[in-house]
Length: 226
Image (cartoon, rainbow, N blue to C red; front, side):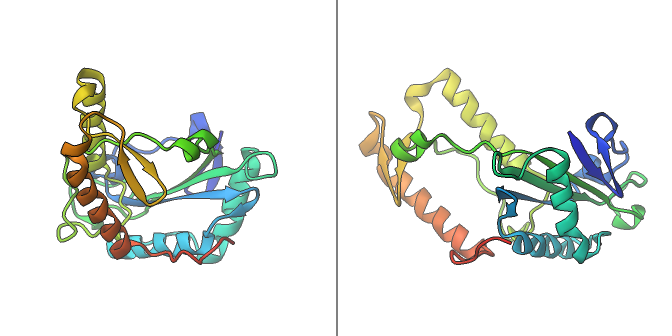
C-alpha cells in the first residue's frame, strides 16, 4: 500500500510517525473518510470543507493548500489500484497536531502530521439490504454535545470503542439478553423473543438518533459527488 505522509507518498512499511505526535499521545486531530464510485469521489468538496471546519474548530492549520487535495486523493487511488471501473475506493484523511514535547498546549507542535490512506471499498452484501441486520442497543452513552461538538470529526474514538467492547461482550456471553432488531427502511421491527419489552426503548433510541443526525449533519440528501 502507498500512503501519503506529510509531503510525499511512501510504502506502508515506511509510513511511521513520531511517538511524540500529539495525535498518538492525546488523540489531538481530525479526519475524514470518503468513498468513490469508480474514479468519482463522492461529495469530495463537501468532505474537504468539513475537514477544514473540524480543523478550524480545534485551531489546527491544514498545511496542504485547498487546490492540491483533488490531485492528491486521485494519486492515492491510482497508486493503490483502486477508484476505477473494477474497484471503488475507501479514502481516509487524518491530520494530527503533529510531534511536540509532552504537554497539552497545541503550541508545542509546530507542524501537523498529514496522512492519506486508500484501500478497496467492500460494500455490504446485497442480502443485507434485502433482509436487514441485527441491532443491539448499547448502554454506553454518547459524549455530550455540550462537552465536545459533534461537528468536529475528531480522531478520539474511545466513546465508540467502549460501545463496541460492550456489544462484543454481550454477543459472546449472553446473546439472549441482547436488544436486537431488524432494520428495514425507516422502521425497526424486533427479531428476538423480547420484542414487546424492548420495542418502546428501541423506538426511543432510534428517534433520538434521527434527531441527532438531523441536528449535526452537514450534507443534504440532494448533494452529490465530484
